[in-house]
Image (cartoon, rainbow, N blue to C red; front, side, top):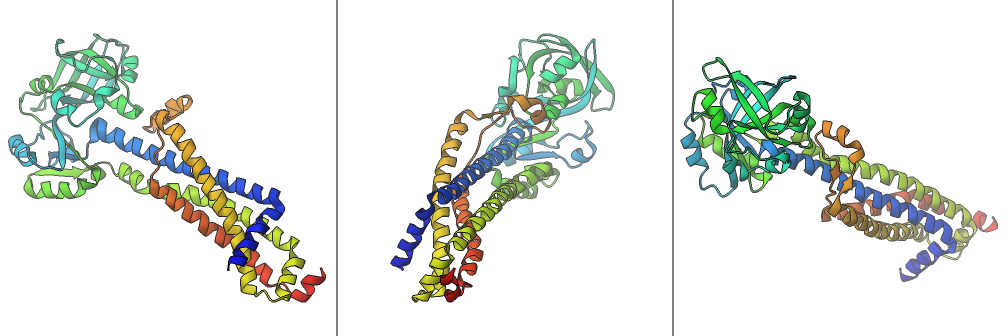
Length: 405
């Protein structure tokens, strides 16, 4: 076996140019594959964190019919009981009661249909990072009367600036239209342009006063220590609070669930495509090596080397090349990842297009140890499979005919 290993190793370097070219293809393919792994995982996690940390959270509680009807009168029954049920649960990192309404936002120049969210800043601070999206002004300045947060896109559409006056019109709990003037205290911008077009934020107490009920809550947003606990905890809370509707993030946003579940699958598809290209390169190179060494292979079989050993030698040569290229490719891929991970990959030139799909212009790759391990395993398997046909071609040689060529 040692002789076979040494012979296979020496055969690699008999044609250095060809071996180096094949190794370079493997190196670049693996490095590109790892970078793609990181970018896709980073995009998925960026989208997930953006939705969860800005407004979705891991679990939401509503009136039984609210998500279907979305009427203002469908407020949460017995909010104090809900608070007592949530208190002391170690899985819960924080929660916030929110007051919601749909209405019309208008200025002297334009108007827009919006979702109005009334928040308590102290509660929101424990579950949301939305305050970090404010690019100008203050987070619901309490020194103002009826402060309001508006997106940069809506501010431009309505031609309003900080301190500008806008009118919100919506239904109160009795179903009557009510209007009130608000002042823009802050302007925000998220990575999701659709979210920015739809949402405005006001102080919860101001919205409740206009709705006509000081304890009007339409939603409880719950942030957990781990998103993986959401399904089980939602089921547990549903048993404790059967009078309300409790859903996890995956039920609230099926498209996000599909993205998280299929993100890994997408990465493997990319890697398989890269490895298929490499496999054809390996196959072609090793077939050329076999054809060039027909006389030599025939001589080896003529002096007693078995066909199994000849096939093993071809496979070992391919494996050595793939392992060397794979290891260097992994090192190169990890190096590129470490360079990009801290500062992120800046795609500002495509910022508007990315915002339409809810992604930031800067992507931070995310690469896990298991991704590297799976990549190495897939490269090794690809190399062995690609060497099968050249090995079969080698053992099919007739020693007597091969020697005479």
